[in-house]
Amino acid sequence: MDTGIVKKDRDFEERTKLLFDESVAALNGETRSKLTQARYRALKEMKGQQVVGWNRRWIPAGVAAVIAVLSLMLWQGQVEPANDGGFDMATVIDLEILLTEVDLDMFQELEFYAWLDEQAELTSGQILEDGIG
Amino acid sequence: MLYGALLMVRVTTFQTQTCLSKDGGGQELRTNIEGFLCEIEARAFQIAVVNTRDADEALDIVQDAMISLTCGYADRSEDEWRPLFYRILKNRIRDWQRRSIVRGRVMSFFGGQEGEDYDPIAQAPGAISGNPFEVLARADAMRALGQALGELPRRQREAFVLRNFEGLDVAETAAAMGCSDGSVKTHYSRAIRRLREKIGDYI
Image (cartoon, rainbow over the protein chains, first blue to last red):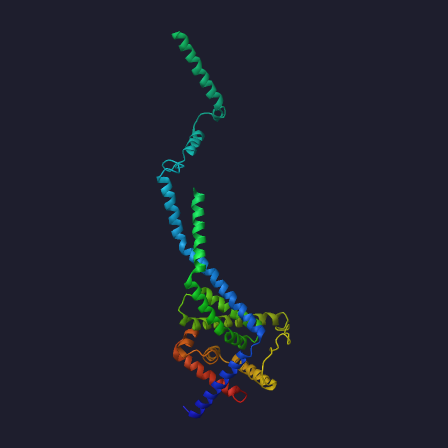
């Protein structure tokens, strides 16, 4: 390659570099202040993301800890299991009531029947007592 | 009981946050990346100005690039920050140029004129020390350089800006541009040649 052209290219390269450096040095205070604000904003975003990231790393450990604590409580009998064998007994009883062929009115007057049953027991008790006596 | 367990998780979270604020590694990273950004911000801004010819847009672009670096790549090795940052900056500038082309077409379609809210006072340079004539000549030369750069093919312009303005070496420029070292050399030498032919006498 022609050394003259290469030299001209090098000179031009140096001049443009110098020109750019001067334009950077000539930036006014307002622009520099805005750039500083932009930098702080970027650093703030980084900090926020780091906190989230760090917490995310601890989520599995937190879940494991919660499971361990609950298991320990159940094992020591502090917490009564809400159901037996995977079924909630109250729900099962409700289902039985709904599925039974007996008239539902009977269940609405359950207290009356309970009282009636009680009376019948009392009456029979009295008869027995009377019989013995 | 469940409440107690949730409370425990909350306490754990609080403790992790407290630990982070005292974390020496995090503080060191923050100091290092702040130093890096402080070092490159003015040059990055000037590069964005040369490409956009709009100080406000340039500032937004630089800020976006800074946020992308700190949020996405702060954990990379410090040697990688510079090429990564300029790659992000280059992409942001390219996105802006694409958007401005679309905006220009839309404006011309509706009969408006882009940049009609241009305020010469707001765009005026700040206080610069030195001979006013020299300052003016430098500003003119920089404007001419920016204009000539805008007329270069995109890859040549990117190679010139990264190598000449930012001072990245060939490997760093290749990493920033996402191409081979050989391509960088070719684009750069062509850019120099074309710019010199165009404004060599002016600068």
